[in-house]
Image 1 (cartoon, rainbow, N blue to C red):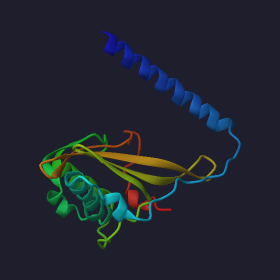
Image 2 (image 1 turned 90 degrees about the vertical axis):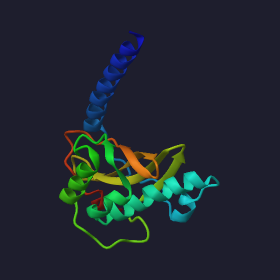
Image 3 (image 1 turned 60 degrees about the vertical axis):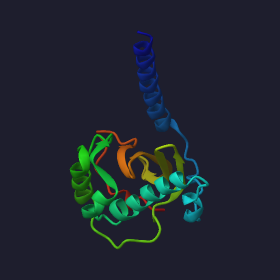
Image 4 (image 1 turned 30 degrees about the vertical axis):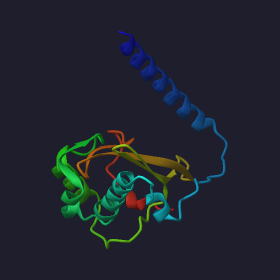
Length: 181
């Protein structure tokens, strides 16, 4: 019962905060659009004293670089489990769901040695790896502002088994590679 109460209270707070944020945006004065600092040294982000954490980071980095950045959906099986659990409400479950999402949202491109999206951090703990990227957006007036996009991946037996991000069902399916600085 307490858990249900806490969840209801959290939902009410989020709804109120969302409403207040929208109202504040309508009244807000223009402000400077300053993006977070982007990591230049990706090798340093991939490093870890723990070989398993380093391997998990490299797996996610290479999956992002080859499948999500280069759009090579046909190589997803190298990085992702067959029964992949997807928490993005705009993509279907399983490896096939990821492949379809990638094919429908981006062209195939050359594989780059480094992620071109503005990567802020790559963090690993246990079987989880989190990425954070700067995401330039436009407000209602067409002015650029910066947000931060987070993805969380769960690793199982050397492959990505589960993914979370903040995508809403109402958000359009996008190619994040269009969100470069």
